[in-house]
Image (cartoon, rainbow, N blue to C red):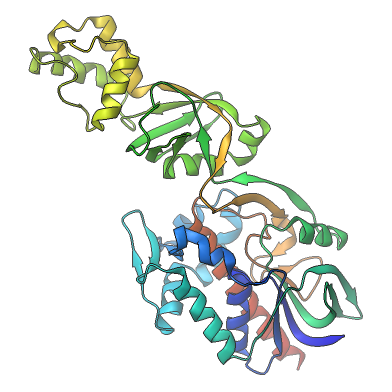
Length: 409
């Protein structure tokens, strides 16, 4: 039996951030991180294509919280305590500069997740935080105001317990035994499988579009990427996150409507097409792409509207004009299944948020039990927001534990 003052289960982003901030707040604490795998921080390593999308350049708490389909209301208060600017400053203090890309995602200027991993490992070594790998947790019990944690290698006891295991069904089951409600997980952040002649052979084309799911109150806009298997890109990923439970209930079979011209209406496009008919009367429609669409997409939509290849603008009938406007702004596609977005598998589900005190990230059911990161029923529309949830939860849990230890002494 090994005694610890603080035991952190999970060697990922939330676990390390909690441990480091706690050790800085109280250097005398004996802190141990338990990780079931052979390596720590594996998700940090592969995130953002190996670059680590550390956070997102959104600096207003309310606006930041809007990026969480699950957790929007609960994270608003915590974000007033620790959010994007604090994250940037935290890494800057440790010699790591972050850069902002056009879409707001923030990465280390090295473009390498190893920069973040090296920082965390150096900090844990400096602060004498113990890391134990290969410790798969088998059971958790509360025993005389202390926590008993049984792993595949040995048993530990601790005054304070932090759960930062991410989306781990085995750990959720152990928490259920302790009385916590688990919202059953479903996939979030996935791409749409679509086989349709209009997008066949257009893989790699990207354009800004508005997408909505027919028969549901779900819609989003953003860059849309055509892939070999269907549609991806931020516009699709946002839709998959907000619709995670609805789309799972439909077994990922549904219809979407794509407006390739974003919010421009069919009526507005009708007028524009009529003006183009006069402006380019003698030209063929295939000569130049219109409305800033990629040329290959424009040609594919003309083909879908059944226009002859030598169709001239002047020869467009009213029926053809309406058909073209429809293809441009009300293009209906059938989704048959989903695909995981790269390696960044995210789930909607976890510990019910009603059971957490979001001032401290402490369990309302069990004092001295803290939960941070994706173990909670919180998920976001991209990886950077998910990491910000981990940093915020880890920081506030660390401050709360440090304060409670001082009060006890």
